Image (cartoon, rainbow, N blue to C red; front, side, top):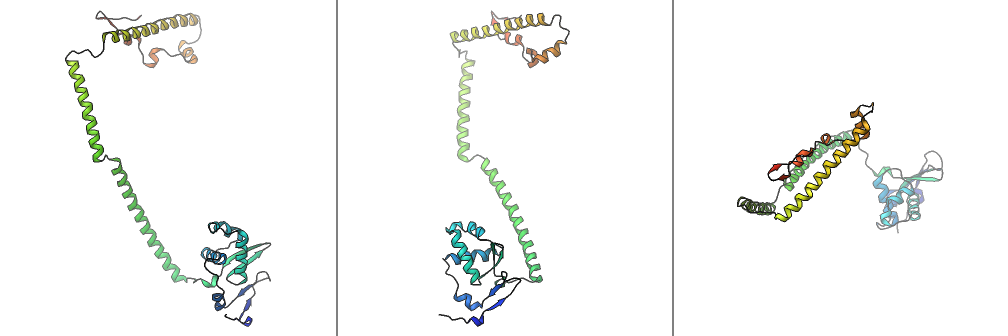
Length: 257
């Protein structure tokens, strides 16, 4: 077992006693490194990856997938802090933890400028790839909207069937074949005649009633009609006579009064 003399440990003071940090030799860290599957190893890896101030609750929320309870995470944070593997500060009753900064390589101004330039080039490449992807997706949508060969064949067969049916119907009409039975036609004509007759009667009844109401009215009849929400047939482009024209009796034009 590796022995480390306490004389090799030194303390760096920063502010108050609560803000003091313990600095340990790297050989001591290596010998005390937690196993990769332990709570301390998981917490240490997370803190180093985040490299930002964290409290126990934020760490617990982020590591829920590992089924670690807050108490276990708090214990791991405290052990890591006591072992010098992470830093911490106390603010009242709360502890804030952060990764040890001396383990990270801090880039100089030249490195920062170079990384910035590389980032700009990568961003430009990313934009080009996005534009290329957009064109490909547009082409895919166009292709997907087109009919496949099988769809075209099915559509052709359907249209040919419809054409044949219409040609058969046209041939029957040209040959003088009656497609509607006389009895059925008579029933339809009677129903139609009755409906048109009711329309004509109701129109006459309304006219008589309207004339009686508005005979001595000082109001403008058009404004009065709009106020009541009344619409004539003509207001909605409907003409009773056009429906009467469809009725044929002894080849003479029917008249609607």
